[in-house]
Image (cartoon, rainbow, N blue to C red; front, side):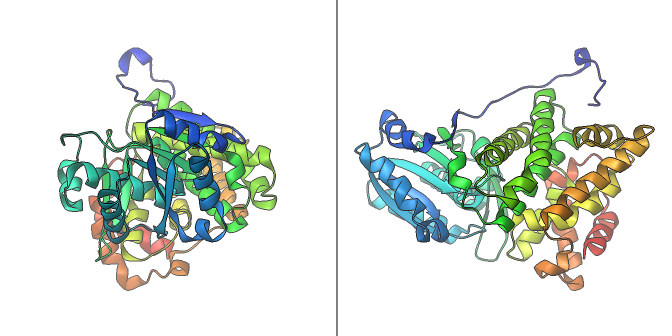
Amino acid sequence: MELNDPLHKVTFSVTWPPGTTFGVGTISTLGARAKARGATRALLVTDAGLVKVGLAEKVAGHLRSAGVEAVVFGEVKPNPTMAEVTEGVAMLRKDGFDFLVALGGGSSIDAAKVMSMQLLSGRSIEEIETKGVDDAQGTPIPFIVVPSTSGTGSEATTGALVKDASGKKYLVRSVRCRPAESILDPELTVTVPPRMTASTGMDAFIHALGSYTNVQVNPIGDICAQEAMRLVNANLATAIANGADIAARSAMMLASHLAGIAISMKGNDAIHGLSTAVESVIDCTHGESLSALMPHVLRFNLDTAAPRYANIARLMGSGGKDERELAANGVEAMIGLRDRAGTCRHLAELGIRADMVERLTALAAKGRSTQINCRRPSNEEIKALYEAAL
């Protein structure tokens, strides 16, 4: 769908995420919200970093103050694996938990989603990828998501990414095992370090960019994506420079959520398709691999996506004498945003080598995000994109 396509020629559907509470200080409502959903014993799924800084215990305290027993599971790694999921599911089955809370970035949220899927279905990750779990008997364990970064928007999506022991990444989805509720409290993000703020911020922007420019049709998703990009462009630099700026942090958290809604409605693009392959081969931060690949995919897409890139240029305050120039200026504005954020410029910085390109190409070509890119790349074109990004 182009910006000027008449609505009478468009067919789309909208599924909003479940209840979301946004606002400074809203984490204090966690205990009451969990209690209202019948929680008596909750497993708090998070990562070692949030355990170390005390945030996990602080959040667990909100549960305990409402009479909900809380146990912290702080084993989730930056790219979650089935080892952590399996351990978490074993705890849920053995120790009588009736509620999940996911605290953290996309890794903790994704791990909790997959725990819920396995707990409901008893299926292997391979089975979940191929047939899902939404036909499984029983009731999914309810859970609340509390993001501590502004980037993935995973609280708004049905999908989750997890690796197996070989490093293969699985993208799994379930409408039934998505969060029952999300609490978006910008105060939880004020201590996120500058580089992580930059990386997660670029993640949010590139989520919105990919959903806005792919071939899927959903005007509501487009509106969410545009506002997410506008908010990131206006606030990311401030959030990096001054993490205590609660106005910038609030804007970034809303941008992340809107971008998550957008990708839940429309999916993503080749930037993500190529990035997912990278993260199957090496361990790296999602926003960093996206940042390294973004300029090359943008230039590859330019002629096809010119009307959309021109509109992004307007959102970012760029001009141009005609649509083509405006679109080209939009590409440069997006690359400039990345460069000011200071995120990764080359895949080699992350550990990708030239001898990995053939494997990466094979993986990326199979990905749905690559296949719904506005200009579908051939295997040779994917290979060239990787080589350019090295």
